[in-house]
Length: 487
Image (cartoon, rainbow, N blue to C red):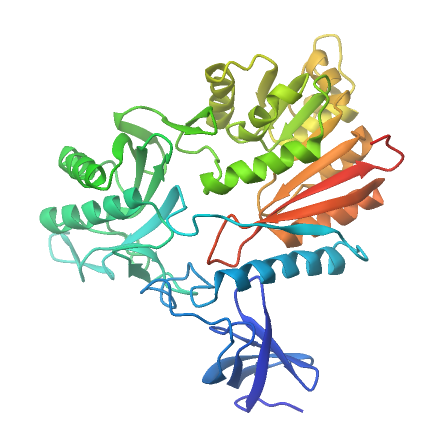
């Protein structure tokens, strides 16, 4: 029987979704942070349960043969790169294994076909979006109500399992534009004595900064989130951002301030424009867009392959964001219906269709599960209002509902939480010939795959895609067919 504070020697076999190494001793599972598969470590047990325990590493007895030197000086401090000391080839093998294991264990598939994992040719500086908290280590309110910072401005990322901000002057994963914008923010705050948000006292101005960079055009959008009505001397900050970002080889196209009540365009354009593989996309502040444009092309080509459209059928693009997946497949489809809850993303999607000369696409606003449920189960009345809508659901006309019900292929790309139960119910009842599921969380993917299989679909094949090198995350695209389909 194991006890708290006991020291054990274990070999790490896998990594959990939370980034902890896991190994076994006498069949007893022990979870140890800051370890990698293949490591043999000594660990002191900090919490002991009936079948498992948590521990802290006290000694690295034998390093994994796949260990490498840290690819970033902030690794182990900043919480971003779980695999900063793990070879890229080993990362790929581990991620493929984890996808397969989850499809077996959570998806109930006996021998799922995972064809492989698509690798990137550019494993560094691949992210086109950075969300960076801002801190000065706290602040204090002096007599007269003046707030003073306790430390120097830090712009970076949270330390592992904390809300302490690590001041990252560089990042191996982010674009040069994000690094430059962070440097400008630090210097501006120092020069003008600008305060940062203090969670403890709930005071201070600067909360965080989001930087979106379009690799194909060089356009950059900066969104500064604040606790207040505005930024003092904001014109100076914009000028500094413009200068620093230009030196990094990009240019500042759009600058917003978000005060948690209003999102205010302070300078430049409402959107930035991205170009990839001959297609153009406009991206607004709150629109979803894949963070790795190099791998996005490979991922969407695989979606198009799995969709196997014949040039005539209807393609449903569910949780469509700015419409990128549907537009990628447009020339193979008779018609595309995209559904997205975010208002601005729907505007972007329709605009993107116009920009790319695509006339066979319609993008509508609404929660995808609600729109689908209304289209499939709602009895549309003469005035175009369904029974579901009268009960607080969504508005949908008969022409659109009929088009959804005639869909041949559904592509779903839900958030990390996976599909709502209403979406699974609607898809099973709609019964398109093929479903292509794109996921950034193999666990929720496997859960939904199991539900779809129970509803009359067969699992054909999965392909993993390394959208997020050096992190524990992995993208997966799955092909499913309706049982009894001709395909």
